[in-house]
Amino acid sequence: MKRKKSKKRTKRRSNVAFLLFFLVLIFVLFDQFKQLNIKETAVSLLPNTVSRDVQNYTPILQKELKEVNLEEYTLVLAAIMQQESKGKGGDPMQASESAGLPPNSIQDPEQSIKQGVKHFQKALNYGSQKNVDFPAVIQAYNMGIGYIDFVADQGGKHSEEIAKEFSLKQAEQNPEIYNCGGDKNNFRYPYCYGDFTYTTKVTKNIEILTASNTGKSGEFKSVW
Image (cartoon, rainbow, N blue to C red; front, side, top):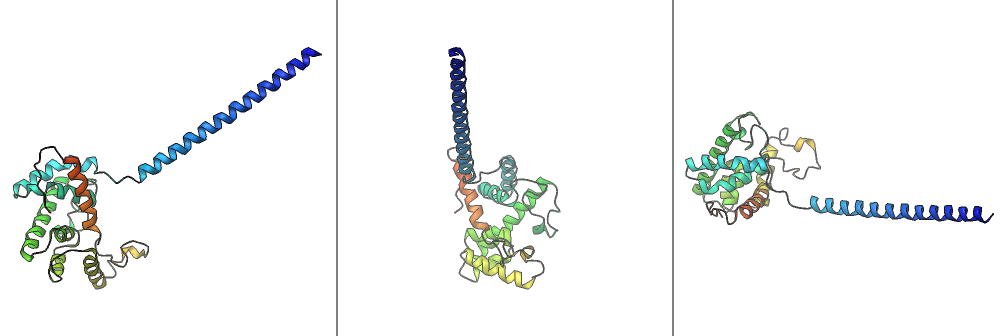
């Protein structure tokens, strides 16, 4: 009789110990899952870094810019490529339209870079001629050379408000084309011609690239 009671107590203790172990295991797993979610959230809040593809194309950008004596703008063009495509696809500089072609007609990255440099050089030279600031030149890469004329008529200094005005003017002239795909929830709507935040985004990319190149060779000059 005593032996049976002893076995029952032992079994009961084993069950309690197993239950406690199981509860502790659940708590540990839940805590690890919680920590993982916190880490993933933190990572998602980190600023986007410049892609490896853009970094790989930077020497080609530098070479093409050097041929037109604009080598100091290498990081600027890399920042533009980051914004345009993150270095993906056959037209990483999204330069087809600046050559009078439909979007993504260029399917050779080196040809895209050549045309992108040509487009930037044209905007830079015209911007200097019209006495506009450098942010207006960057915005003109996205909105076209006509943006430089628009900024020049309003004092020569780019701002997102001026870019909005220009965008809306262009969109109203071609509402069937520049309508953000009919998506009124698009952050650009109704300023659907180009991206009025383009210069702000490219500037952020330039800051990231400049920081990553600090103390390397000092070969890239400030363009501001």
